[in-house]
Image (cartoon, rainbow, N blue to C red):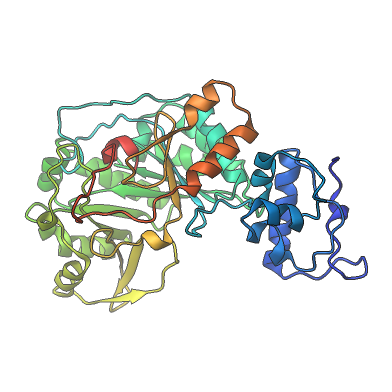
Amino acid sequence: MAAVAVSGLPDRGCGGKRPRLPCLERKRECALVRFLEEFRLPFPAQSKRTNFRDSPFALCSFAKTRAALGLARSVSLAKSEWRTAKSVFLTDKFGRRISDLRISVTDRCNYKCVYCRSGNNGAQFAELPIADYLRMARLFVSLGITKVRLTGGEPLLRSGLVGMVRELSQMRTLEGGPLDIAITTNGHLLSDMVLPLVHAGLSRVTVSMDAVDPVRFARITRVPNAYDQVLAGVRAAQRAGLNPVKVNCVLLRGFNDDQITAFGKFAREEGVVVRFIEFMPLEEDRVWSPEIVVPLEEILARMAEFMPLREIRRGNSETARRYVFEDGVGEIGIIAPVSHPFCGHCSRVRITSDGKIRTCLFSVREHDLSARMATGASDRELIEFIYGVVDQKEERHHIGEPGFVPASRTMVHIGG
């Protein structure tokens, strides 16, 4: 079946006239057209379907998809082709749309944070050529990804990173807009690299910073005199226009939980968004226990000793609950995967530095996208593989439950 022009869109019972679709439906229809044309898939012939809600975006079975596209039952096309065409936006079997991709570009890190690394092990997994990560990203973007976050290890150690950001900035989402490109970094090299990254197209930055006291910071990172370097990176990012800069702090009871109110003051004075993260069982030493976790309610109570917080609106797929101080100056976020899991709204998948897809931080299985690329798989074959992987995304994690099985990799080897 030959492809037809956009003018050959299915007739919806409007006397041959194109109906006035709501804005979102028009965007989805245009996205479908671009998708079919990009991968040279046949566009449907005339059909009597009358509502775009009955289109491939809203259907999940092969038979319904073929009917919705107005194909005669006698048309013989590979099922894999129509699986590719049936649902442009990646969606798992629980109905969660996948819009965020995190790519670890290196397994190396110049810090040895105690909650993350044992201090004895270095990089354990390979790095791919930047071109491979870009091909993976391009495939995911063609399936509806709108946000790409580059992680590590420490991503600023990776040569070619600025060029990678520049290439990502040239990609367009299915809706036609630019990608939201972010980086998570320990900030040590940020002051020197932030301007080239911003000029290349970086949208946002998150800095990991687990104390606002230089002595405590050195104890956590096991890097002497690093605090001032990271603070300089945060301020450089602000001057470069990456506002608001987010600062992530992993809290461990008895170790840095006495920094809660100090971080509240830091958020107000520096104009950053501080986000506290509950400690998860993802460290190399595997010493996690529920007693080490500082839960959301306790963080709020202890911050109230400094100044009360009030909750503000957040997006459905945002991991952090958002708060501002009662006088409106300073924002605090709390990411509480242990005490308040948000798995039901998860929109993320991850690619490790060696090219494996992980559908959850706590996955015990990985899916080797890089190996398929190395053996010459076509874009269409890779897309089919991605659909199959995402369809099996886990419903939720099982932290703290009897029989909990730790993730197959620790956090530094997954990518934050």
